[in-house]
Image (cartoon, rainbow, N blue to C red):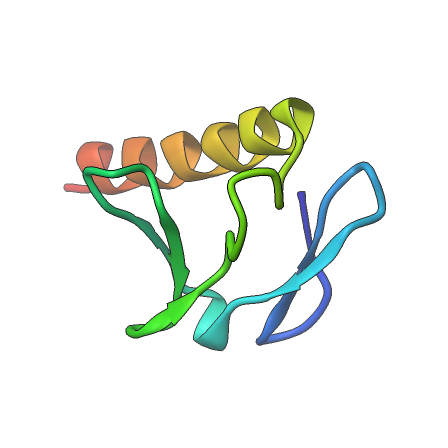
Length: 70
């Protein structure tokens, strides 16, 4: 996953999506949000399985950095 600028990401599939301030979150219903109140996955099939895996790996990497921060 590539950061394009301060608001957009590009997945390896070429899909570009908006995330206000590059903030991505997920809730317990597995809905993906951007910023503090915007929804990214408007439909269940918005992200392919490959894209979900890529996004999850990116987020896991961020959480691991956070976890390991001293």
